[in-house]
Length: 249
Image (cartoon, rainbow, N blue to C red; front, side, top):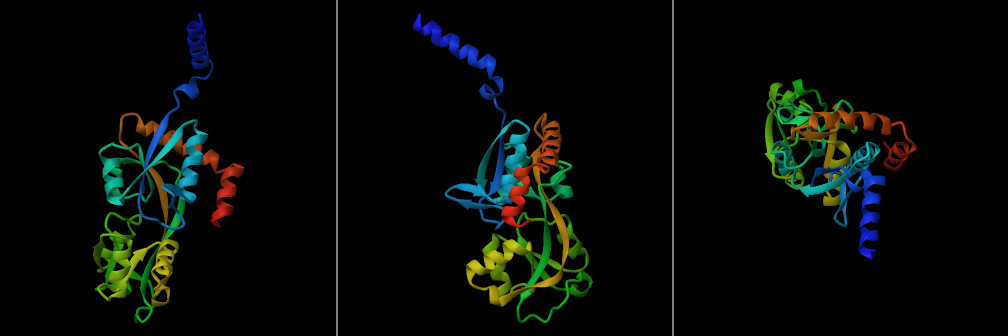
């Protein structure tokens, strides 16, 4: 009799709370290196506005989220091969659109900026004035077509294996400029103790939207649309305002 009562209770809970029993979980791949302040890893967990905005919108649509840590090139590969549901905070490119669904609404915007050594003779960021120069960026990174535009303007791309190696290419004089986002670059420069050796070329080249970009698994175009609607709604809530205030966005 006791077993029958337990079984009946479980069935009743399943009927009363189907969302809890079968909550949708979205698996999101995140780069394993810090991209301060947009996402950083603390005690094995990702933190930062990209993470909190994505998680807030996913929960706003009634789902749960699990973040999976891996190198950026693998983030792209896992989205492309449909081994995860989405990748965190990527820009939109023609190549990525071939294997991804992009929501209409981005998580946030960040800048694309060229950096040089402090003693560089370069003074302006106009790509036309930089013809024949080199720029480094991390392999797999893209800035919404800004990097392709620099190549069309006559600059030469040099791909680095990671953020530290990209900065070393600049400080050692192997390249003349680096293409990156201001806040992550300056955070890395401070961490490496070389902030007095580098400077940005102003103005920034552009602002680029960062998205939660979804794989092309069956049904994920609809999932991307649902997320976009939830994100738009989430951005009207006090929770989103608190995230903006916390990170100074």
